[in-house]
Image (cartoon, rainbow, N blue to C red):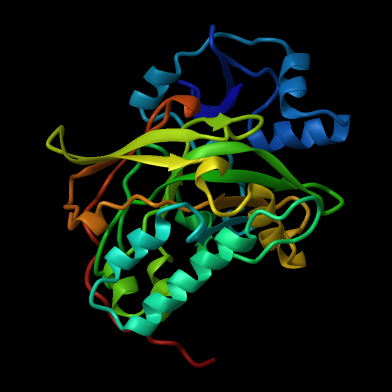
Length: 329
């Protein structure tokens, strides 16, 4: 089953469910978050909650997406309570991509990347309930940085690059007792500034504070062991770069359970009612192939298991950096 959020023609919000035989509005659910809260209260999973409500009116999701009415598949009415985070060096081949991206950087920085990647290979998939080695982790911001499918990605004026990262993201809701519930998975563009990161690896934290998009649909249930998709950049309707990307645990150096543990082990991230979108990493970047996106280009990511493709145009960069003056009080 896939779930998505959209605006109806009259402007009201709704949740749509989709199976192979079509999509329909889920009765009585204005948001995925409300639907998940109801499922938790009833002691059942999302699929059972949707099934219990019966099918509503049919909906054409492709038409809604083309009309700009599809929203993020999971959000929060208070952006401060939506957390965008991620992990890197988690996929087989990601270390090679990182090294290519950092060509010309100081050797000791590359050594640290390779060291962390090897740690994941050796200890990222522990057996049973044992915690494995912790991954690289980063913060991308809160719901202010969450961009709907089809909406534009905008770089701040001080950014040095605007590059895509095709990934799978896990979507979570923290239950009333602090339990993290995984609602599903979505395609994601973990938009980043790779030139800033290449300048000094300690600037990785700065390079990740950029908008990101995920969706349009959320896959409910388990993530396939092998996910194969395509990432492309369209310029004037034609692909100027295209490359397949792989995800799923069969292509990762860490298990999902290990990545989730090392995020939610912090009590800060187990606050009831909060929403988390966690990006699991990638080994595919156009930047590593020397491609530089331009204003008007469209980033497009698709994978058959996730339904409709995720597309976001690159908008004009904001005006140049202006020093922020802090006012004394």
